[in-house]
Figure 1 (spheres, rainbow, N blue to C red):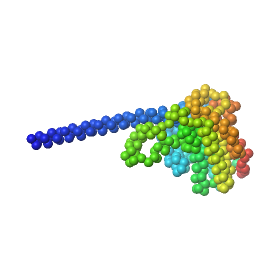
Figure 2 (cartoon, rainbow, N blue to C red):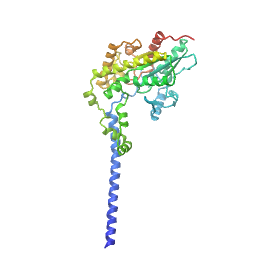
Figure 3 (cartoon, rainbow, N blue to C red):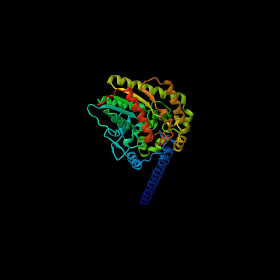
Figure 4 (cartoon, rainbow, N blue to C red):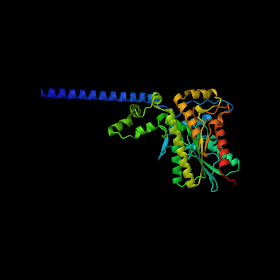
Amino acid sequence: MQHLNTKYSKKISSSIWQNIGKVLVALLLLSAGTEIVARFILHRSIPKEIPVGTPLISGSETYDWFAQLQTERKELAQQFFSYAPYVLWRYRTFSGKTINIDANGNRFTTGSKCGKSSVRIFAFGGSNLWGAYVPDWETVPSYLQKRFRKAGRDVCIINFGQAGYVTTQSLIDLMRQLQDNHLPRIVLFLGGGNDVDAAYVSREAGVHDNYQIIASKLQNKPRLVAHWHRLFPNLALLLDSSALVTQNDIEKKQNSDLLSKKIVATYLQNIQMVLALGKHFNFSSHFYWEPALPSSRKQLTAEERTFLASIPAVQAQLHRQVYDDIKKEKRHHSLTLLTPIFDSTAERMWMDTNHFTPYANRRVGELIFDSLSTKSQISHP
């Protein structure tokens, strides 16, 4: 009888463990499936700093390098970023036919050679300065380098642009260079658009891109919860209400007028800090507010109208509001508003909702060259 009870107990115990195993497998499969769904929902629900559009090449220019550039952009995206102190991310080293990035994470500037007597120009900004949809030789810094060399001036331009950088990140990047005793003669900043877009998503001025998402990954969590977050990051992020910003949330909670004034105030304060650094370290500073599609008055091409229509109305309005506010507050001789420079052309200037065409880069570069030639004392060799 005891033998039968023992055998029966073992059978029940085996059955229980089998059921537990089935439940665990089912939970694992359910969690994996939910993780996939969460990733899809997050992709659709969290506004991107720059809505992604497929560039359509049209107009008077054709680009035989574009296919190679797109291939290298995909390769670059697959290797992700490197962590960088205080500024959070930088590009990794990359070598290609159209994109080259050095060991410091800086995009190659065509024709730039830093000799002992060269005037060093540090260029800071986001992806428009970096050159999102153009090869090395079509970036704004490369165009500037070409123009200065053609004018017989010995300059060395370093492209410190990084994808998604707001002005505060560029300011910190400049500070890090000065700490390492890398001293420029001239510093220029091309940006403003990322300051607006990052504030639009986060409903807060002065923050970097993907603020809530990065913050959610750094919050203190119990060890078990932390392990679960590592196993199912998208599901965890979806359930973290502080990281999920929906379109309705933004439209309900965001006060565009107040937010705009805070964006402009932060930008102008950054200018003051750079000017103070320039006075101490003996360099001149020049700021250029980049043209934005929502605030442009140019005759838009069919593609540009499509891109503009894809920008959420509140985000487009914030761009216009910030531009109006910064025009009213413009009190720095070092600040130039570039927004009007596209108004007189019918050529396509944007490759997507935010990034410039090569022709637009040349227009921007030409104006910056004229500005630096007038405001800066760059001697002939």
